Image (tube, rainbow, N blue to C red; front, side, top):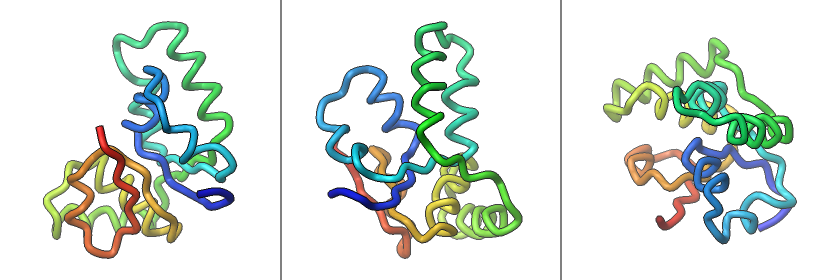
Length: 123
């Protein structure tokens, strides 16, 4: 897998920061996108250390942040209603659908979204 656009879920970036092996195969050489929700989840954690904050800021600077546009909100509302998703997951999935790019995640809850291009990683 190389040279594609891909939306990266929060849990992938957390696992990367913790040294999980094999993730670089999915990330390197691809154009990475994250939802603004991912940015908030990473940097807003109440126990974040200065080292973690620097790591995530550096990582996020290499990503394109998908803001919460009217279109993403509308998709998120529909996904939340139809699939009973948590709000952050609905926004992340909506961002992937809006951009028409795959979502890279460890979260199997995204499998219930039928038209989502999903790359589900094993824990």
